[in-house]
Amino acid sequence: MAKRKYILGQPHLLRRRGKKKLWTGWIEGREVALGTADRVEAQRRLDELVAQARRDPAAKRGGAARGPSEAPAPLLSELGMQFIQHCQPPRHTKKTAASYAHRVLKFIEWAEDRKIRRADEVTFKVMSSFVRSRTAAGNGAATINRALTAVRRMYAFAKREGLIEQNPFKQEEFAELKLREPRPKPNATTLSPSQIDAFLDKADEMAKPGYAALFRMTAGSAIRIDEARHFEASDVDAPRGILTITPKKNWTTKGYRYREIPISAKTAAAALALVAVREAIALDDKSVWKEIQRIRKAAGLPQFSMHDLRRAWASAVHANGASLKQVSVWLGHADVQTTERYIRVFEGKSTGHEFLPR
Image (cartoon, rainbow, N blue to C red; front, side, top):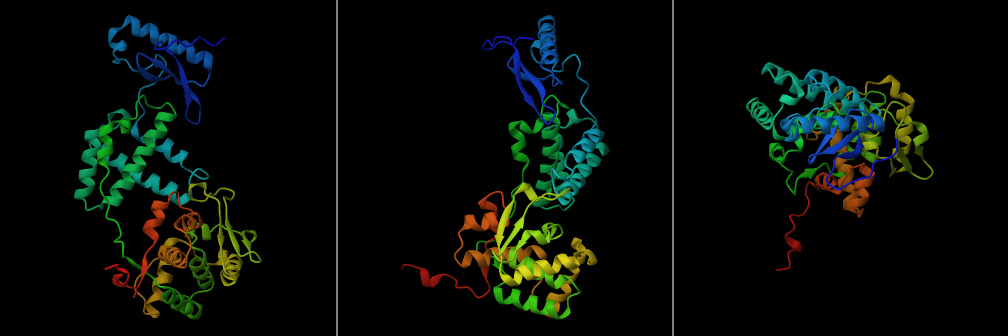
């Protein structure tokens, strides 16, 4: 079938969207989903829509938005299951996929309790009610925003795959749903190098086998706990002092961001020691948290988490002269703004008065 000549303003095939590369068309000033990846079939469906719009004035005004072969909008539960399957590795890490699944299912449960069962029944009013209910339940702004992100991405997925005609989150008012999150104070403190050393020394004394190597490697490279579960001995280049983080079979780094991190000889040795015993220790979040708290209490340190070792590394490297962009790349951040929130000051740092010009 020869391509038709494009005439400005006239109905025409527009683009292919989504993973399945389904065609969309342009008709009466709007984009419509055609539900097929075949160009000939897409053109046939577009011609049917044009003929229907000419017969039915309501369709011409947008009252009949669906094509002749399109099914009704899916149930929220069906859409949720498809989105959860879509998020599985290697598209996202297991942890991210599980987080999206939990938040999407909680939203669907909330919606179905209010008799909202179809994807096209979710409106700005519905989402505003969802935000208010989560706030009343005691959820913080960050928690609510993460839930909104999961639902928004589910609808973006549905639009790309041709499951829904319109993505309601593209409407201007939906931007108002996001709540303001409290930011760390500019002078927020982090663990100092001496505190990190005290924690690592105490871990060498009393940690269960393998955990001391995990903590020393994390404190010396700032890799995420999920990355610590999956890196291999071949990723450690001890002579060059480089630790490589790269996707593996059935697992990917966050955001697919490959990177090389500079490490010391001690960190390289700890990384290799961890690989040797990793299968023999529990590396789930709860087990690692309990071990950290047991050791830091014995060392007389304030409460902190595994991720605080990552923040402390970033702060120390930046304080030693590394640029913010370098630190951002080593941490595997998508943008420098995220890294800025990681950089803290150490206990006992100057208040800054000696730097004042007058």
